[in-house]
Length: 425
Image 1: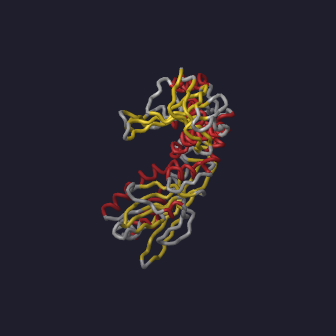
Image 2: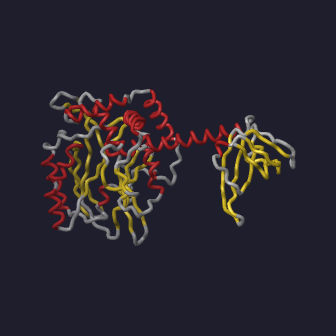
Image 3: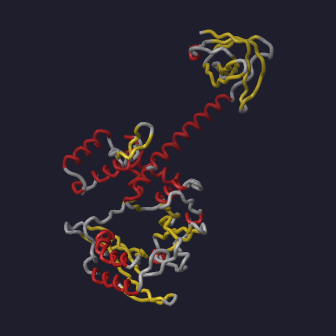
């Protein structure tokens, strides 16, 4: 921990720099309640800026090694500028920025979705993970600021209050130097997605909240895909007893055995890898969901707070695959239709042994309803009939006879147009 003072615009501002384990942040905030009361009383505010992070090895009391994240914080006091309000947090990643909007009604400018962690107030270059977006409604102006500079747009701490704040941090340094309970575990994204796709394969995609009476409710669904995925991961860990009671763990493992759940299956590996490659290639302009998903799936590790959106890749990629199957099916059918040739002479009578009969469209007009029927024969030739008559049991038609009205093409497919037809079953 280090403490220093800086002179800025005639104002002395005290700054404290310290390292705090991720698991101790909530305890830290409780300890700072005393400071907050003092600041509130004097209409001042303070902010802590997370300026960096460092991973250190730590072994718990059971001898199990862990990689623990320590955050580097800086705290200082400032002045207030009226008219500005908090709009969003910008979470900076190598592949782009995840925007966590606070004011949902504001349209965030596109530039903040890819910008670096630069503060537009002080223009200082720092290794920031998060920056903050503020908005001035009167000027319709957005500004990206670091955590320290956020204080310029809230209530500022005077030098005396900041000095008091710093002394508290000095006092706390020893008590918060090592990780306590509840430290965060980081999950490897490719591994998470292997489990997610294996869950999706056996149980489909289930959203977090239940769908009741035509709308989404706030009723939590315990069998949602994200929760199930994490449960299956934990149940497969050598430390499973830490996550579940004996009966709950037994039930989860029985379900795993019952459905043949295997995150190392060829399906889980190949599909998750293909899905990651697919999302990385998507054009996400104008689609914040896909952009956030793309960024998070491009990283090697993720926090628990991102599990829900990452696991949703299963449903998104699943819909893409379904569309691909439909597209390929249409292309295959179209290729088969290309063998069709014109049959008979225009004006001549023709009788056809029917292989398939389908009503492909119907519409109303001034004369009633027109139905468009499509017939094929054993050679793949296509016949079209526009008729007011409705054919019952079209799949049972065995033959059609009529007059050749025209030879036409649709999507480069030759088709013989019939009129005044009779069908037989």
